[in-house]
Image 1 (cartoon, rainbow, N blue to C red):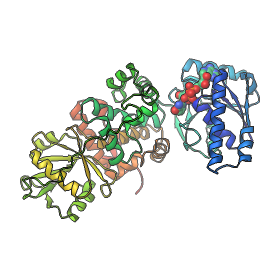
Image 2 (image 1 turned 90 degrees about the vertical axis):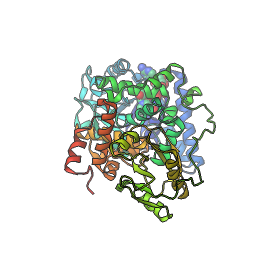
Image 3 (image 1 turned 180 degrees about the horizontal axis):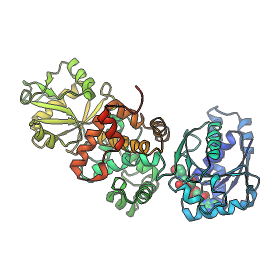
Image 4 (image 1 turned 90 degrees about the horizontal axis):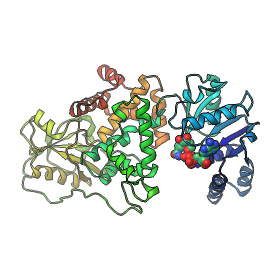
Length: 497
Ligand code: NAD
């Protein structure tokens, strides 16, 4: 049984304290603000009572667990701790000051850990007498529920302490992933495009926020849409993580903060906590209008065409099973042609391939089961041709959302960028394909790791989407990770089949 010190009794400190006492450790808990300490105490008590009400704990177990929590009124009370974890405000100089004070209080054998979500572990340790004992131990919110812990190694952190924290995390029932101290670590870095691409589509009026959220959830299989999630996290908090990654990467355009998000923050529209963000709370029923004609239009005597790709074959099969008049498209044999987006706008692709009535479909996690699809169409497309496609999709039980002709649509560009970001971390030897995928599924609830998703879609297809986005925007924001390039050329996957 260890003596664990926790400094900071806010959201994260309280959650971490609960994890440690539930795992059988004794915790000494410190916050300079008495009201914060009280709030932390109440929160832990309430969570334990909830577990009792759900019969996950007995009353005796809950009393025993709570008795291992010792509230102390000065940092000096941490002198006997084997490990001290800080969860105070996200400010480099305040955290550095705290660690310097702690070094003069705890024994030379104690380990120091920080729950920082964005600061460099190397920077936090650089004025310490024993920088090798400072480790990043990044929990996710809510700490008692989220399995992932990023164990972060600064340049001077010793492997002995990394192994120690990794084993401790496992003992506490968590799934640790070791990573180097880089901007955003794994999860906060790879997740940037999840928000960034949605904000770009919004800024281009490609779709409204409710449509984006629905498409990402119901087509992409993500648990929450990006706008919903930003509202939940707090637009200001989300923006500050983006800003910190942007600054720490010497203003790499990939992480450039969105003007639209900055304006919302300036207006005090911070999401749920301020009552308004992308949505107004309580959320009104604002489902996007979907295209559902259910009436067959004039041009139905001609066949619909599709451009063959393995990605949408399941959808084509569903349509064929429902007796849709569907043939593989050549230049002029069909009234309307449907194709999976490859990162070009429909208008560009229609011109490149001389198909005037071209309708693009966004990526779905499962075309076999999806009940929603997003379509965009070329400027040259006859509205009746679009109606034909909507009608056919409705007839197999697929609702349709029509978005503007934005390059890479919504899910495709998001998944391509998530995979690109994950691939860069693997390329830079910050993590492995297995670990980045595990971190993203456990830390964010993504339906599938971005690199496994890339393998399924085909790394070459991801590379094509990024190449087209890069050409369309003329921006290095969409530059292809060297590892995606390499795997795409050699036709390799990230994971073994
Ligand atoms: P919070 O504001 O809820 O709590 C911070 C607590 O630290 C407050 O109770 C405050 O009184 C106390 N504090 C401030 N300065 C202090 C000092 N000098 N010494 C001792 N205590 C001090 O913050 P939080 O959301 O719990 O975040 C804490 C840390 O965890 C931050 O580094 C944050 O980046 C990180 N983090 C937050 C989340 C999240 O979702 N909130 C997730 C992962 C990591």
